[in-house]
Length: 290
Image 1 (cartoon, rainbow, N blue to C red):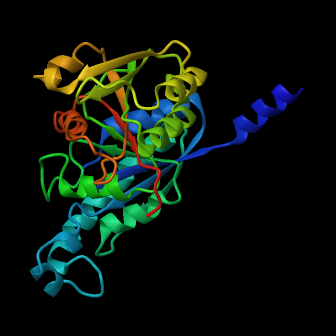
Image 2 (cartoon, rainbow, N blue to C red):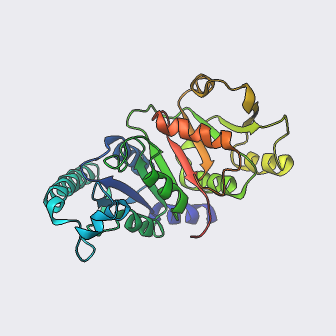
Image 3 (cartoon, rainbow, N blue to C red):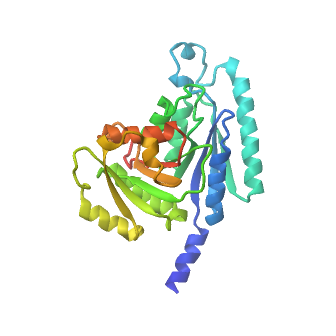
């Protein structure tokens, strides 16, 4: 009886997922990801639509051309048209795929800050790793993406435009609190991956063992009973792409891309390479309050 009640409660519960789109950078891959989650469990998909440029991050002359916190008039009409087209596409796809949705169109001066504020009231944000605010800087992770990953108040899943269905989970572990916060949120939110092969990856600097080895193995086993561990000497990895090739279509879990949570520069390089090459989905969270 209790089991049935739990299932009934779970059926009526919804996760609120944030779909992020700037300008006309509508990511079909991100929407496909949301659609796949909705097939597993009903979600509320909130579309957050913002300009392709965060004018508060531009040089000081942008301030002189702005008024009352709105987008400069010379750019507003074009930006507004792009956002409206993206909103129409989003709404049509949600209706077609029977996805519950809400829409928020952010036209303020500080669009990135508006997105960060929205993460406080979301379970997870889905973000395209290829084109996020790429008008400002096309090389990812750009400064805007780094700030998002540093200041977000919910987990972020970075989704490349071209990816295949996940076949492995790699947990980039370093013993820090941010990694464990990311892992806890991953197994709560991404239940569709609960049966995939799971590997704890630890990049060693000088041959040391997994930090807090006994308790991390104990904890992971509760959620992924058939996990493996891989301790890798960071000095021996000459080509990250070749190293990653050993794992077919992984999803990567890591503590968020923050200044405080990456004490090991190699681990930061590892995540940056994955994002820059738009290879695999990356699930990031730090768990800290702003």
